[in-house]
Length: 285
Image (cartoon, rainbow, N blue to C red):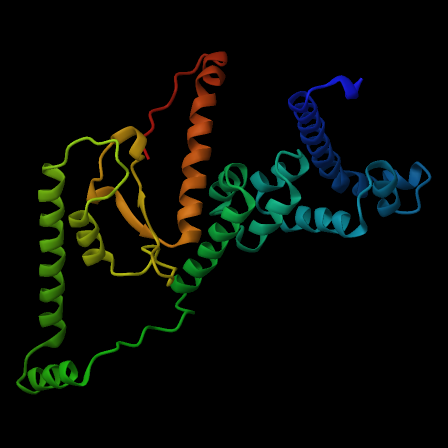
């Protein structure tokens, strides 16, 4: 009797049933495109696939239409289509990547929908759309904001016959070189630590390199967190070569990827052992 269960046992039972209900619901939805093709619902006395889906699984007409639409949209991306018809990934997640799916990126998208939660997937897709627009030069170019004094000095140099492109390139190259050398010097003096507090000197060099904005190319939001691209729990180092300033959304995305990848790696050894295959080499995050 459920009344005799402890709170923990009751919650565990509810989660088990809930997770399995969602799993079988996804499996059912994956069958709909083939049921539609065969008109199987007609042969079983249903007036439409919508009635069939509602009576057998409680699906709304909108949910059914979304599944059928996605199956058509994934015609040229068989990996994503297979995730849909096999019920491996939810329709909601697959719908989020449909707008940017192509034969060239479907493998990356398939991996993303499997490991990322919904909110992180939204950021991932938005970045993909912006990146594509930048590559196609659909995003307007930036306007340089220079003070009147700097503009006047540059004009004078140009009037003297100096090549401003060459002059500015040399300055930028020198700046990058100085930052690189300072990061090397800092890294050489680092000691392992269990404190997640990033020393001021390291924060300053990261800010000098990236400014105050998120370091993701497509993002213009202010940076709010320093993210360890090489997992801190493994390295115990605040190496400036592996620190990136991120906004809240991209920091959440980065941690979601790290967490899911770590979970996946933990599960891999037994799976590979079962197939007699060695675990592939992976670099630390």
